[in-house]
Amino acid sequence: MALTRVEWPVVGVFVCPDDTSDRQGHMKDFAVFWGCTIPARFPFIEKATRLVFDDLGATVHELDGHTCCPESVLVKAADEDVFYMTAARNLAIVERAGLDVLTPCNGCYSTFKEAQSHLSTDWRATEAINKKLAMEDLRYSGALKVVHLAEWLSDEVGASVVASRLARPFWGMRIAVHYGCHLLRPSPAVRWDDPLNPTKVEALVASLGATVVDYATKMQCCGNALDRVGEREGSLAFARRKLVDLENNKIDALVVVCPSCFQQFDLNQAALQRAKEDINVPVFYLSELIALGYGHTPEEIGLDMHRVPVDSFLEKWNDRQADKVRLASFLDVALLSKCVNCQACKDDCPVCKVDPAYQPTEIMERLLLGQIDEVLADPQVWKCLECYTCQEMCPSRIGMADTFRTLKELAIASGNGPEQVVSAYQTFEKTGVLGTPRASARKKLGLGPLPSSGGDALAALLAQEEEGVE
Image (cartoon, rainbow, N blue to C red; front, side, top):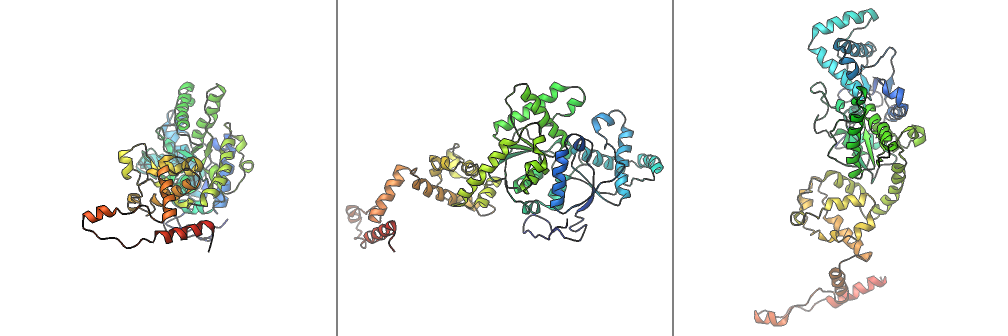
């Protein structure tokens, strides 16, 4: 499962075929801690994750003796000492194997990181735990690295390397991300991304070619823990609020990185649907989305085991491929996607300042959604002044002016140009000029006649080009 060395100029890592620890301790040989929920309730998440490990050349070890991490709500609240001892024991098993550990579960990740943080400052607790672990010939030091699957993909492998394996990008698909609380908190025990304004999972999804959609309830807790303490209606209320927000944002799918969050938005969404609530948001675990992009079939991954069908997502994804081919015939789709996902110049357009209804980035996003004919028929296309402010402000020197010029040309060709533009161009084709000077005005100012115009000659050339004459 060795990876080929791939070099990327801006984002990414070098993945060497022989080294188990290349760039600054890059993990490609590690133990995996599945936790309880994924193997027991969502084996399709396990399957997709295994496929991604294999595709990215990871060497994964599964160790005997692991238990629940343990889950915080049900164990820590009852006995904090048992919570830390159990976490330390699970980590000690990995330490004995001389490995680091990766988990695809937010709860397990948070438990291990919190245990490491707590025991690093409480030597008495660590000593007491090690006296108990000695009965199994185990010892906890806390020296191993604990990473989440999303953290590994983002920080260890790199978004560009993840994207380099794509067989089918998610072009034109609007995808939202739910991080889950325990992937980011508590800090400083957990500190791989901003706990209040994270971006790294969204960067991964964007690297897969999707349009990442921000939304108001992104950082809202999924609420699944309320189910564990008998607050079923409260749990459903949490799920409903976020799912309605997502539907209002017209997303095609929600991506999660936690099995408990998946349970909340897939299983509990299905419960809301059975109660006749009009909600339908396909949900994917991150590795499922990546596995699909790598060419694995829905049947191989087991997507039919989801409670909320993902058929609508898959059908739209197939349709977008034809749209992409058409769009690529006249625009650089990669640059267009980069522009839509950046939007750094969104507020710099001078037209937007006097006409808030004009949003050029939204027009470009509509192109990525396959709404090509609708965009060409929209008068908003013609509000671009071609002042090149966006290009000067663009960190990548892309801008939108050239794109809008192309759209205007296509709009005219499809019969959607403004009457003023169409008639002016027709005059230009016939005369080679757009206006003639007034001799009386020039004479009044003491200006002499201009040289003779070459308009007739240009009009003749244009006529030949129109007729296809060489």
